Image 1: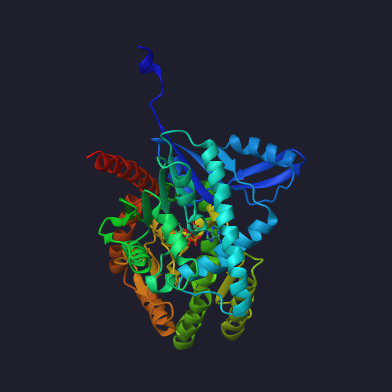
Image 2 (image 1 turned 180 degrees about the vertical axis):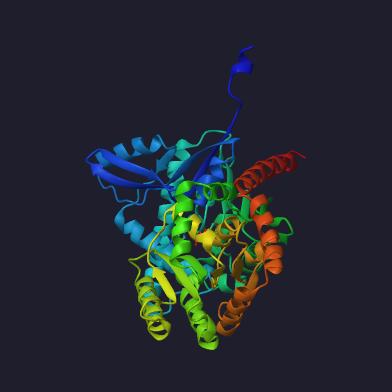
Length: 489
Ligand code: ADQ
């Protein structure tokens, strides 16, 4: 029969995020070169076979002319990507301003900007207006491409206003929203001038997801305390329906890392690194250069460790790889020079003519180099002051089947809830404690290392990004069906 020959039905999934998973470079008036960036989200969704995913987002470039926009739209369509075009002014106000200068620090407990209070308060309103406007532009593109039955999955703090815009246009649309950062205590969220508008909008979604149970609980408290709504263990009663709120801890595509370790290119890098650091223990930090990652604190703790334990001075090296991000924001520039200054001072203090204790790289590494680094590391140091989850800790564990190295992990990273039993947990603000953890990790007997590694490895292998995405989307489908049943009763 004809019906048997048709392809199995795959539900369409519209993934809406601020950035498309591509980098676009203009090669001429109507020519673009595109490169897919294989981040966690991309591989997560590639692995979910029951959905046909399409991406909607900003391509990260300003394209003021129509010819360029048309050509880029066409090129992106081949990669299942649909662009939202944002002009420079809106990027400045919405992305650099409201998203990165207000929401990002606030959600990581760094508070609202405090310098020049008056100026900030004045620009705050216009930045929020730009945020609403940008979210509406995303909604317009979603509405244009939406077909009945599609699932719409909105991502992150950039798009908190999107669920409301979408539901206003079409009440029946299945809308989920997931936050990749922490959701802070309601006492922190309360300080945000647009605190209520954002909560109302997120509540318009059918399903609201966070990395950890704590973040979900903070969100529900914010809704009950700030909006006076009724919270339940399952979510929040909102406008006659239940908005489901739950934890969906993300994972990585662990097989991709495990497989990569056997590739000749990675093996070559591993040999090079082993040769280069022969006779020394390798400690590793891999972070985006962001204040939430606690990089200065980490380096100061390493200094304290060297200070207290002269034996290790020529027997250990810290490799800190920090990719610069948001380089046009003054605070990030300040952080870069602060880190350089500390590293310079410590290397001057403990270095010799031939070696230095810290190798600091201000750049991104390719996937093979990264895998090799993870594989040769004895101790990984993740000292985020706050972090939604932290995937670096997962990637390190995935690459350690041979070495069974130690993970020192901040208790303020979401990952502390999943990898806490295998890692040494630390308060990154307590430099003495982190220095002691370094000493303990370097001396840890192999039986203990094995036991700890096994615990973490099992977790990383069984809680993958694919599973995360699959669970979120099926939960969203179920939530909508349940709500329909309830209204029919
Ligand atoms: P990030 O803050 O970017 O993500 P993280 O989860 O650690 O933090 O992911 C960083 C990714 O970038 C990792 O895949 C890592 O390999 C890669 N990376 C970092 N430095 C690199 C370098 N120098 N070279 C190459 N690659 C590098 C946000 C939240 C996190 C949350 C994720 C996913 O802040 O808390 O875990 O989203 O939800």
